[in-house]
Image 1: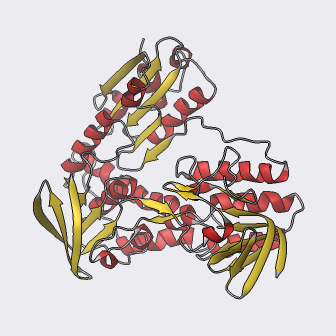
Image 2 (image 1 turned 180 degrees about the vertical axis):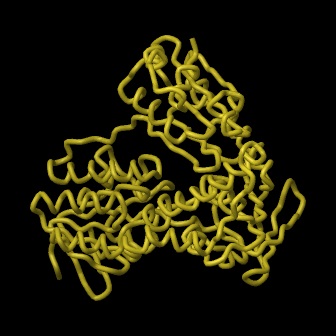
Image 3 (image 1 turned 30 degrees about the horizontal axis):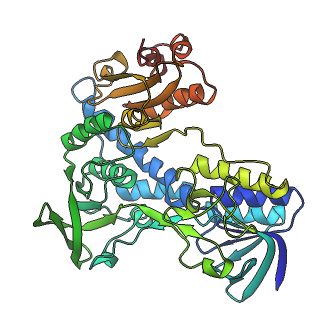
Length: 449
């Protein structure tokens, strides 16, 4: 039995933040991961995805400017793009583990399983600690359909040596739309099959409608209210069957991608042996991100039932947990709005309440919604879809929500986030002078009088 002050399960943004902070405070720390060290975002998620999005943006921008000064559209060389992506991802496990070694954090490779409230097994090793942090992230949620094993997940998509001609995305959220844009710009025919009435349900409905028009204009087919019932065939020659309003339909594909949501990756942890409760969204935690049922255990990042499944949120939660471990739960979870972006081409970004949410709360609000493809910042690059919606509280003048679609949205949303965090009134934000002409300088026209 090996004993530590702290054991961390997971080496992503949340887990490594906790481990490093607590170790730097002089505590003994062990860290465990069943996957290559470094976490999902840097190896199997946000970062490699954004590399591919960068190539898709070049193609899209060239297509938009064809015969407007640009004479040819470049083609994506998929194997070469994958090789470039690997220059970012391949060094991460070794570099992560080396940093742990340099800090004196003891690393364990394998699946962690609880034996009791504060004891774990990893392979042949048994470990115990005063406190344990679960930061194991998320995994694709089971679809529970025949032929599920024929689908690939987002990790496998980001490792594809070649891109098939016909691709089906099962699901209508971030992953489906981002991968669909990448694949379409690389020359694939893409179909998105989603069971809901509209895709990207967490985003403003009016902006999603604009985005959908742009998506369909580049040849991506979207099938809504479609329940996938089974997938059959052989790899490279598959058929996706789905039920749509009582009618059985199907679509053929060389590749089918699971993009229908993720769940906390806790199935192998045997949390019942530790008395740790799990809900639909993950490990149940209190305001200190401490397990509601086992005070020796904390959870942070995508595996916990608080906060959005975003990398900045995971890092923030990791810092919060580290502070609470070192200083007896002095910090509580901050529920301030967090900006989020779906990296389609163009991107769509959001922070705070949607119009629907604000009205459901009974707020008296000013709402400004406008398509902006004819604004100079969009017209100069011939952006085919763009728009915004802002929601301001009539009584206080504070921003309640901002929703943007178009080039630069992923950066401009951070200005709205800064204003909301520090309670800068909408009028004061609109009076700011920004460098011109930039996407940021459009902000003053996005706020209601």
